[in-house]
Amino acid sequence: MTDSAASQHRQSQPFLSLHKPTPIDGSFAGKHIVTVDQFSKADLRALFDVVFRFREGVRAGDRSLIELCATHVMASLFYEASTRTDMSFQAAMRRLGGRVIAASNGVQFSSVYKGEDLADSIRAAACYADVIVLRHPEVGSSYQAAWYLDQLGEQLGHRTLVISGGDGVGEHPTQALLDMFTIVDLKGGTSGKMITMVGDLKHGRTVHSLAKLIGRLEPKDCTLALVSPDMLQMPDYIVEYLRQRNIALVQTDTLADVLPDSDVVYWTRVQEERFDNRADYEAIRDAFVMTPDVLASAKPDMILMHPLPRKNEMGDAAQRDALDRDPRAAYFKQMENGMFVRMAILAAVLGTVKP
Ligand code: ASP
Ligand code: CP
Image 1: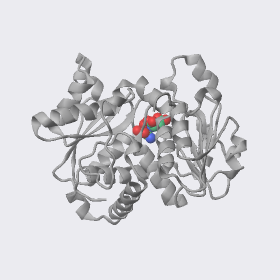
Image 2: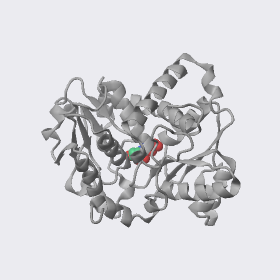
Image 3: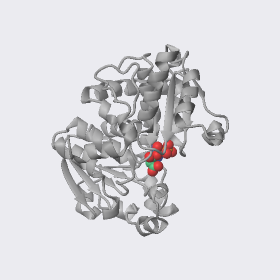
Image 4: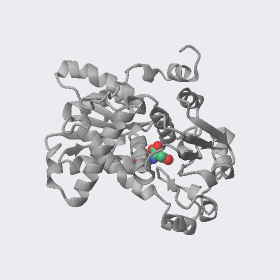
């Protein structure tokens, strides 16, 4: 590991070397969740069994679920905007009987406003909660948090866990878990499939995590197609990660090359907030727009995914409406699955369920 893209990436992101993520390796209890690198195929299978159980349980009104985390508290610490990740984690914790805390008026009106740094805010949350869900704009922020939590744990005699809810343009591990669960749920998995990711693959942390997770599973006969304008290509360190795991890759800027053969199409938003230069964003924002006309050339049994939120990359209101009613649109099911997956993750790391 000297000059590979992956090690160059780690060296350029100092926080990534602070904490060494612990592989799950069959045991979730007590583990921070900061990257998909922690998961093996067996871990995923075991976790998804719990997700299926929890989903059935919630739908059937199973009251035993609310015993699972009845003595636990989760802190929600979001330094970046969120609808789904924040709400689904909160809902997940509550459906397991746990409590949720957050700064009353959002993190911007916590002591962050007075200049408190991430380390001290993390330490504060750790004094009051058993698990912290953290979203922060800096790559490696959840690794940083894990490191501070382990240090503090020694002093306090109990360790609070962190789960990443997205670290800048780095990763969004629990999103990848819910994306993969949705692919397993609706398409039976990734083996033998063509999975196509479209749009801002450079800044999109969801596609970074999902691509790596696909690499980790080393599915048989799976092709991963990466469709983006030149400016928004998947980072080299992830392409290398995939090549090392022998994933068949297609990289193109022409959707028509791959759309008719795709089984899963993962559409993404151009990440406006990550651009330094507004003109670059304006030039690229409409590079790929999914509309009913575009979807017409896709397979009848494919699924269209999107982590959401969406802006103009799914056309105007009428086009969106038509897409939403297409049976291939999977993004609302994907969004709902997020809560069940996060229930399983919370109960598993808190040790109240054994996947
Ligand atoms: N919600 C996802 C994220 O936070 C995707 C997006 O914002 O476009 O990464
Ligand atoms: N998919 C996702 O992370 O959505 P939010 O940004 O709304 O949390």
